[in-house]
Length: 391
Image (cartoon, rainbow, N blue to C red):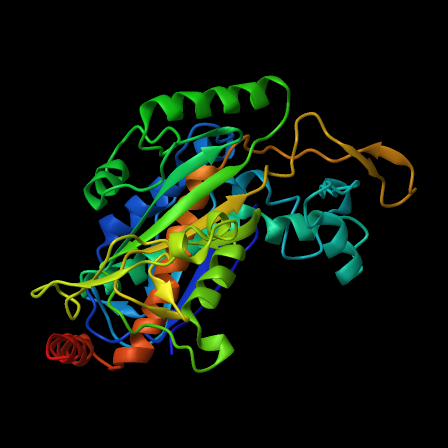
């Protein structure tokens, strides 16, 4: 079973990612992992924190001589900003006068709910862990999952569908277009349509000028996924349910859509369901589809088409023009606290979405094919492909 977790605070010394269950013998491409972390840091509308950090993954266990060894993988991401917070967030008691309490909760953030849950007098500790900075550790682990999936020719990428009221006309892109988009150095808003991207940029500029923030929609596409991942047998084994939970767990994501589910809810069945055909020689048993409204999943099981997951990202909660709130101690009406923040994080959230989709698919692939070494897992996978070919 593939399991992962993260630890660390936004302004703490480091973030840590822990991943267990990967077979031994997977080659870890350090350059690729660091490139994924770089992609997460890009995007028009990011704040000053991203000019401080330069995320690089340091593997401290589970990888030796460039390959996984079957034991838990631990990845360390140092926070450069820690030097500015050593007295504010010490591990020891420290000097209370140098701490930086968050005295009024921000609407839309975990501040108030977390403070009530853990009986904190302010929201500092809540903010530190609930922050989207945590997603950097997920992206590092997701990069490892992507390297695993690549051994089966499965790839995962994302693009931005909408920022605020600006959106692309059609979210259907060729895989070649998605790949070229991911290779760009000028990420901007990671949109495949230059005209739509210019309108998205204007939305960010408008939010920046007014001290506001803006959300949007990102789309994650998993390419070359074989049929048979996930299951309809039990509720918690359904692939669409697992993916929805995984992507929804990202900070600020408030809705998840598989395929064209939102539009499909307003249509008749004849316009929604993907008609089936057959073409001999196709990779996965020869069955084809005229469309992919189902987003590559039917009955909780992958069907051989691209898996398409849309994440709906609310505007982030920290505003330079704060909303109304209440002070924790006095209960007096005040403006919400402000912490240095971004205006738009939709492209970065897309990279986080890629990581969560990759980790989910890697877990399902291991459940399907098993193996303690890559040699064994790849052999099992080839046997399954042969089974599909002979179906």
